Image (cartoon, rainbow, N blue to C red; front, side):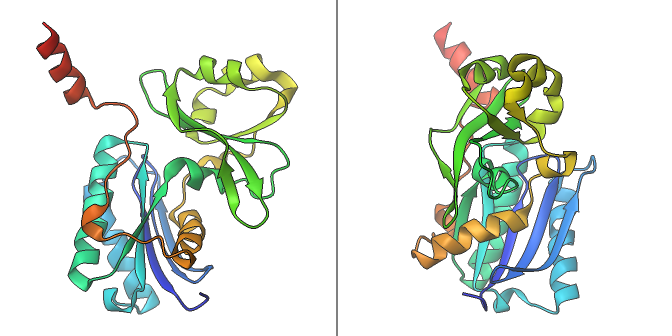
Length: 235
């Protein structure tokens, strides 16, 4: 496992990232929180990291891609990029949830971990996890998208919250949960492709890989286009 060469991509939010890992060891990572589309920067990030590490696509054992939930456009770009690269070199892909990936930012948390990603439209993508010393963040409920107040009202006891939605709704969180809310520093709320690699290695060890063609984004809620089409059909 420690010699597996992996390329991971996350484009589920404004902060896109690419990582190269050799087993669990991070070799290189690029994380950009800039207002440009992933289509403008993603391939450049991949090329830069491969060049700096002196790796080629053929050197990779498998690819990792964060499949959502998150930005519909970002997810499509990231997944299409990884599928294209993986098909060129004939390597498998492992899909990883953005919610489980952000929960990786709070290792060894003694409290339940509430992934809290900004879904826009006054909603958050959310899922509750518990930390397992062997398997990392284990989901204790299904992923969903809800208004932030509804999520906070459902939480009992002490809880750690992580994700860019925490930054967007911090005052609401503090007003609702008070001292029961444990909030990490700002840098912990950014998704990182390197965190998805550890989860993917666990999946690899269980032979849970996918063909590139089978990877699909996980949106949870319908897109605006789907909503508009449904509205037109109901008229």
